[in-house]
Length: 398
Ligand code: C5P
Image (tube, rainbow, N blue to C red; front, side, top):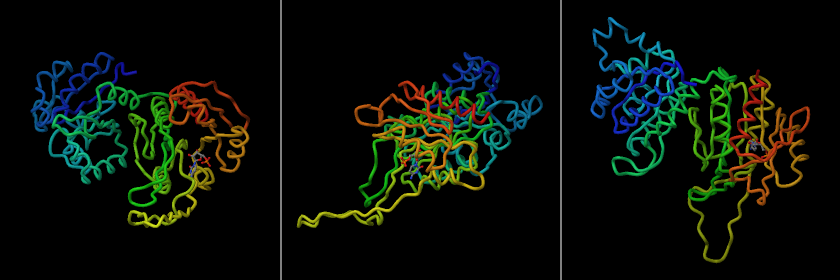
């Protein structure tokens, strides 16, 4: 998949830069050509010599390197690649990208490029969680920048949390998806996934057992076929998909807003287990026991039905809208009537009775219901279901 592909790899300044050396080696093993650029910060962590030795070509470091300007200008450098990869992407580089700064070679290339850009953020957990970095991230995601990681774990600085750069194999997968020449190339697909959390008060919420595993697998499978995927996820426990644009939400209403913001799309797949109801009036402070044995009474309001809303759009409806139906009884008849009621094109129905072990498990047994009938698929891994469904979506969008 990577044979003959040209990667412009920008190595930023962070301890994770050592992993980028391994990334270069693995990219070249797979036949990719790697043009490395080292920021001055990056050069504090890995040497230009090791980067250029592994890449098999000269490493660019300075904007006003006259030799390089006469051989290959920075504009050309930014455009001669198939993909620009920033690994590690530091908080500083992300801020420069979000703000459109161009005061060194790396940021100038990133501003000048007309190619897709994939970032692998790596930084201290506080820096990652800082509102400024999260704001920059939202801006970059809005600009269509692809991202892989960061992962959660022990950090070189001794803290624990999100901020570790994705592993080289994960970055390779994201690069593969970004460069895919598959049948969904140029198509935009929205995938919702995971449960929603509906607050009762500041510390309690109503949730469900969805892990988000099927949604993540589906997003990976669609990206592997070349789709640009916007992944709108509730608080899921399954690993996030790679090489897709991720929007994290908590409630059904936030999920609806994120889906609306992500439109237009060629297809939308609603794999999220959205809470049908929310607590009508969320308490602003923690509900206390009254000491007399009185029980709180919760009243509910109906959440927006995102699938039905998108299915029934007059203008700008995705060509293909797919819903999921997790049922515990009469799976086929409930799912078939759901197809009609919601107005979607397909329903992927499954039996989530506890005995099946499907909800939160690794396997799924689905029936695909389209307007021309129902197809039972054998029980298989969620990744296999995802691949099969992604292939069907590619056929339908043809
Ligand atoms: O009505 P029910 O929850 O069984 O329908 C399931 C399908 O509808 C799933 O595809 C789910 O993602 C979607 N849904 C939604 N918004 C809701 C409820 C369900 O998009 N509020």
